[in-house]
Image (cartoon, one colour):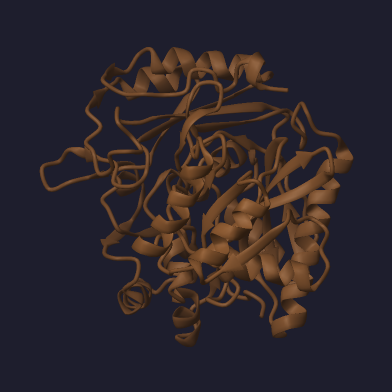
Length: 436
């Protein structure tokens, strides 16, 4: 299916920093009207759009009705829950063009077992040892077979907070067993099933792609940091920040690493097509680890990464809508990225992620921060009292670009020093000791 008509009205479905930067990019073309459907009132997005609706992401009919009311030409679904609920399918039934995966394709993110089993069936050699269990006793026994040196993963969506790893979040073998039981008892991820896989050792990186059938646009690799504390210690978070280097590679990568990761993504998309007869479309990113045994897949997400999308759009020279138009209509046009490094850091409420739905009480001069060359992105929304509340997300991201990672980091650090209030952040993201 081609997108033959001119795109004049765009709807973004999502509430956070990655949606904000997407809207900012689109607004480079002043002729395009942009609307947002959010589940919280993001103050930055509200100031950018021509109209918005606040509602739950599982209310598919409400999203469709808003798109019809605004006579939307193109919908971008950039957050996981509405994708897993099948919003794309409902929009397409109303002949509204959507760039995002069907509910079935969204399982590559929303159902970790599905993605692993698809790759195993099609012999895509990028997986750690793993098994999926409906029986907690069998899951515990398998973890013991691997000496409890495992990653324990709920099957469904957990806002980036569900995966726990031995010797990191799970300090002892007893902790591993307790967490397996907790997943079954509380149905973490929405189901009493668990994925147990061997713990991988190495350096993580992410590659984000814009996918439309057989066509794909690649972006520079990014490394993000999910651990709360410096030195990659403490519990997992949705992410505390990220960086990218000049070009498409990270300091610890070789060109072959990037190409192998892209090849894994392409093989997965081909495998999905063979299984279903359906092509994939949308923002797909693979999170990989460079190990001694080669490149391994950690997981897929079928929407832009947060914060990785910030690093990417910060240096994309093109208007995203032009890029998508060319991709969908198979027009060979180059996508240009500035030859810059980027650093992004989140400030979060103290007590996060153990305590969610907190108020982030901070003050800063937006103009002074922007004058430094640092951008501010909100992954938080205003509550009924007008206070900035973070929900299960993080808070505020600060991101900058420069000729080197160190220079970009110094800009972000200077901006953070200008923020008044109580908050926590990872000072070490972007420093030389953490970049290998």
